[in-house]
Image (cartoon, rainbow, N blue to C red):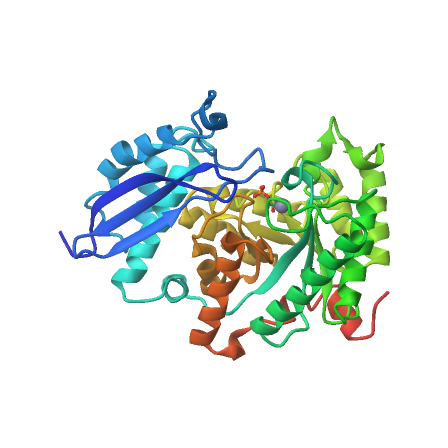
Length: 439
Ligand code: PGA
Ligand code: ZN
């Protein structure tokens, strides 16, 4: 056995930001090096993503993870002990061999991603490298500090469906450093809170820490976001732009889109028209899942109409899957991909989806889930892969702030020059506005 071989691998139950059980894996190598990671959990899940294995039944709302832990502590540990932690692809292939179901329904994507990430951490520690550097070295990338997308108002499945749209976010592509993004966003978040307070609508926060969306229409949330940007002393569309996650699969029923808050139902064309109106009237630079995961024709039509002026991200639609990204590219649907490691279930598959996006000329946004923990692996992944963008929720709550704060630490190690600034969005509304060419 060499020193980098896995000598023990243990799963344990820990708890996430919603108070739900989740899976943590600790890997120890022959020389005593330790790697550890925790699986996140989504609430608005794509139907083609790796299964989040839960026990079901009444206890803990059916959310316990004893089955997933048994898989880790029996099959996975038996297969991986003795393997070289530096051989990530072989480790991930071994996981795929243990569970060859299409969606990892036997072991659970939560079990496999915690294992796969823990091995990645152990390999980085074995090489005496911070995780971001290990990732950059392993995949031959130039590390950069990503541009954040930060939620100001939650919605959809993260806020009891109080509004239909899931995420109302800001990006600060005009900032010169990651610190500046943090400061500008903090002012906007405060200003939004003050507006909600003034209106008597301050009733707490949604699952990812954005303000609870007490609004009479979905568009009122957008208007309020613009007011908050202005109240923070910024000119909307100048260095601050808006990013939306529509998460349209969540309110699609039989091919129609049901906006419950507004008591109206739209077909695909009407949905595209409504969103097109928003793109015209608000400085929106990025929009995620504008149509449902099965509405491929809608996604292609939306991309044909607006793909040259806005970033269009596939999340539920592409589920961090290289094959689906290639298919979308051939159908000219979307121009960017959300990378959520647990949708794929292993590090290697997530990196493959990232590579497929790059091959297709699509941008990538590394993303957290709505159920998160203190685990900051994705901050390192975004930096190490040079994804350009990172989405982890709002500007409160430590499961979110831990990821932003980790980027600040990495920025100090890397040097400020590494911040990507406006580059990932240069071909979008924001970029055109900067060139004075807005339509
Ligand atoms: P989820 O939502 O983690 O609840 O799936 C996040 C997103 O849709 O981007
Ligand atoms: Zn999404």
